[in-house]
Image 1 (tube, helix red, strand yellow):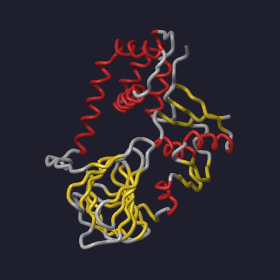
Image 2: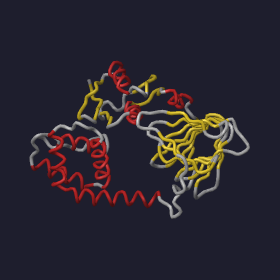
Image 3: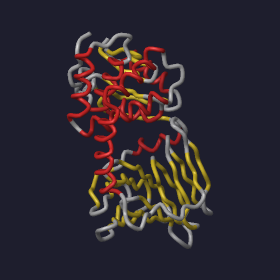
Image 4: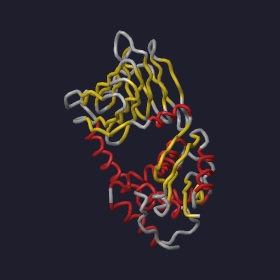
Amino acid sequence: MSLLTPSQGGPLEEAANWFAELAADEVDPATERAWERWLQADSRHAVAWARVEEISARFSGLPPSGRMALARRESLGRRRALKVLGLALGGLALGWTRPDDWRLGQGPALSTAVGEIRAFDLAAGVRVWLNTDSQLVQATANHWRLLRGEALFESRGGSAPTVLEATVGRVRFGAGCCAVRARDDGLEVAAYSGALQLLPRQARPETLAEGRQALLTPTAVQPLGRVDPGRQLWRQGRLVVDDWSLAALVAELGRYRPGLLTCTATVAPLRVVGSYPLMDTDRALAALADSLPVRVERRLPWWVQIVPA
């Protein structure tokens, strides 16, 4: 069996490739050693490997070869993998935790599962839609905390503004429509109607004008240009794209389905225009295969990859 070379799809796709390689009925020692070298070469590899194992564990009916591979990997370097993973996660924790843990004192929680979109009525005149795999908790009547995912708020306004808090800072708004999305590098905020006040934890507040979007970080507000009005249509179960790369579309569709969805580097730059159903991502993938020179390949029970036709 040939050894894997680093994928251009990033550590997560590399980890999935290694998982597929090690899940074979027979794996030669050279492949096992190559996997160990890859795992120890970069802390991001350990994080990606842990993510792939987490995804695979969610899927029942793993074939016997997969179970054998799991046992094999434990004997190959589980302790070293966990050590690297611990160092990597420790570094992330240094950047995101605070002594006065902002998550303490949580009230009622609203949440969605992967692939689920739900609407909730909050305080009088305020309605929120939670996108896939999101969680929002209440601190006080008009104060909410986004723990993960994405939320869109519509408010008729009232005597007190609504406050949305995240690890990086706060968003304060009255009447209007706005959306927030948690990212690894901060909180993406879009003002579809009405102005917002953005309050970084370690910088001065700034106003986000209607029709603009920005990235809120602990130390700054970074402009992201004008909002895309079609972006908010996810609350209706549609993803509308205009001249997106296939890689960007695949990354977005992947949020709405269990497992891992990727595309090869060869097809990643292809441009895409259209409207895709978020509640039926298999149908969205079939539409891509009909309109682009690609095909959809299931590499593992939990890994679907788009490859050249």
